[in-house]
Image (cartoon, rainbow, N blue to C red; front, side, top):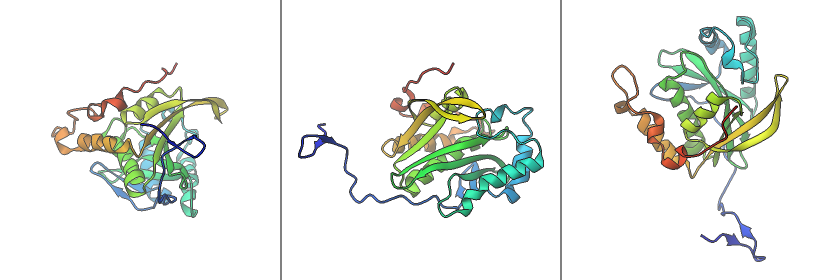
Length: 251
């Protein structure tokens, strides 16, 4: 299809008639089948999150996070209080959410950040999945619920995922969730006294419908055994275009 051109013969991007800035994410909870996404409340979620985090024998789950693992309960609470502060601002960013399992206990964190309402772009990050959430349907559903709010409820055009290019598990997760790899931003960030090359991934609103369909099919009760094991992996439901994307191998 030939690109649109202006009166000077220069190609132009697709028009967006009636476009307006997107709403800021609300504080209302999101209900799912395996989990519930809630605005982070340190007083209510602190004990559960700390207990879940301490099930890990070491700090390896914190290696690629912006913060170091707090040394004890008091330090952990202080860190949560810092994470929750942007919710008190009119257009706070980042907005941390607690991931609450079916048993009512918070077991993870994820945030909306780099919220660009004017361009309709939002990122998910600062993700901490504790051991009770890792490799569990609740963790995957949590990512779906946050995507669905951004696209279907708030009308954002682009949903981003970024990570240290050496963080191989995060990069695999991005592709599993249906993100497209877009490239490496070299020496993009300094954190914890070291340099970070950042791997960029995204889903656009045009790519969202088949991604949403894949998540919905995977989350269907028929895809799980009575004991809760998946019958088919999420990758089996994604359109081939999403699963064929290539990316440089992390060293």
